[in-house]
Amino acid sequence: MRKIKIIFTLLMCLVINNALAINENDANQFVVDIGNQAIKILKIPVDDKDKRKKELQNLLQEKFDMPFIARIILGKEVFKNTSEEKFKKFSDIFEIHIVKIYSSQLGTYKGQKFTVKNTEIKKKDAFVYSSIESPDFPTTNIVWRVRDLGKGLKVIDMQVEGVSLLRTKRNDFKMVLDSQGIDGLIMTLESMNQLPDLKIPGDN
Image (cartoon, rainbow, N blue to C red):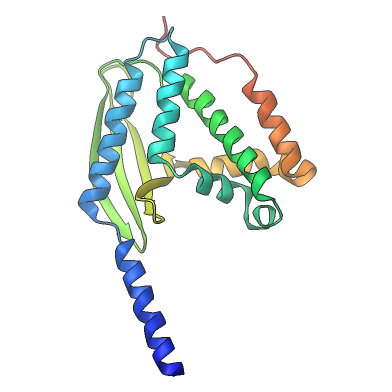
């Protein structure tokens, strides 16, 4: 009976792993879709900041696993000792924080071209290599880390010119987390989210 249970468990693990396996072409198209949506956001007039923010938030919610990213940024120990309600509050505030930052950093449309170059499948993740080329600016290289956590393909990290979103935010928040805990971090992010928007690059 014990052997049957072991075999059944192994078979279930194989089924689950196959279901969550990432296809290279699917990962490529998934990131192409992100690039197309980002270009559309760039084309929104800079004076319509609310629309830019709304479209960026829609992109994050649709293509990124923001709760997963928020959990990784907090770290295992903090997440384990945080209530579901408080984590939800942090995750929501963190999402607003990301929208606020990137809505001002995206810039405006100046003929940028988004290209997916190649994809590497490493265990359960796809690393999709892409670039943004522009007549007026140097080429920007972005690597998207994509995983299927049972909700379809989602971005769980991105590296812009080798700089990881996850690593950067963990470093940014570490001092506050260590000294004030998640409550202090939530208060800090709430204050930061109230600051005036930064000037959008390309807004003359």
